[in-house]
Length: 485
Image (tube, rainbow, N blue to C red; front, side, top):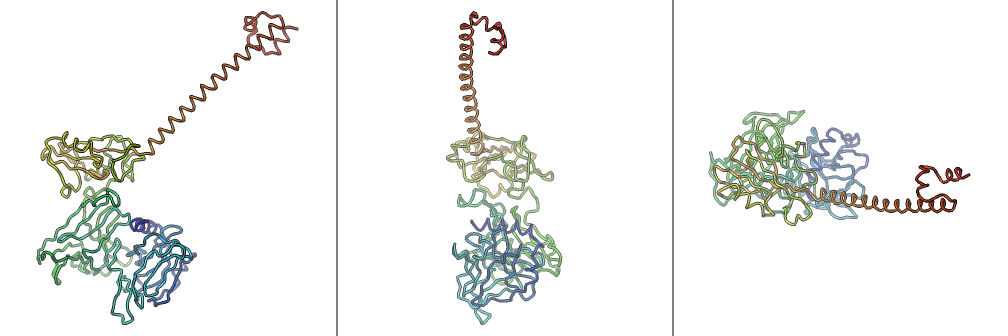
């Protein structure tokens, strides 16, 4: 199981379990450092979070976090809100059982005696320490030399004064969206095509404004969440090359700040009031500009909400895709699926400025380029500009516009499940009709046999033929016997 699934499960079950720490976890003190020889296992009595290491302020804790009834992740939580700020990028989820062990032997290691190592810092340190900024560190005993720190390996969140460099990636809890840095910009990306199936689609690109300092070509940039209420992009020195201000820009807030890439693909900033997190910033303010705000095959109407590309389909929380539709990969080799086409006028893509296009003379030419291409899921064409945008990933949300000259052509793959159901239904009906035919033949034969038997009996008793049998109507053999007496 990949790290994306871990993050999704982590966020989902934390939301369900927030505020439900067991009494054991709430009252058991945890140390402020691990030394070589430390070892711990999950406690079966703990229902949600088992703290193992705390910072000096008590605001942050490292421990085992349940992500479903019998699995866990190693996470750093903001204790007052139970919000995870970091989790180890394990190769797979560990189980909540005595066989799972977290130990420190110079490396901090999460392992299972039966299945091996899930995660390791691969260090030769002397102690593990959690700072009062939530940074988990492996240090030498001098307390100065840092061999490893969690701030270098963020998950979906950045906290105040944490550097985010071009070698790092923020990944949303569902694994669909990520944030990365380019040479002079911040990029948000969507993994629409599925893992390992081609490059991610960029849906937001914020280029540095360079108002106070210019970017030197060839030198990397980095991003920092500043206590003054902004995301600062830096390259050299303390002067930012770009500032993305929050609602509380240059205002004093008493609580800490964080930014997170959300499951809907938005990048949001928050500050802590002492009792709750307050939304202070969002990179995308219009829901229709999110990469898939209405789900697959959804239609976002600005100011009105979501509907479906097909009027006959009702929108729900999962989007508008038909049951059994496979929303990954491509249409190549889809011999066991049915593909049909949906057309819609007055639509455009929410991030078309960041997509490639070809100029074509007509919608027919644009559609034709997609129709025989099994890697193409659809096209959106503008009659006014002649731009043909081709979708090389399963159809997501498109935006409703007033310009009817902007038209869309979308392929819908009705999945294997539907065809299998129809196949089994056909087989079942065939067997049913076959059984009816067999029973009909057998019944007719039985009827003839019984008729012949009655005829023979009547002939032996001197009753003339079948005509006499007809005259007796519904009489049974016993009735016939009684008549003859």
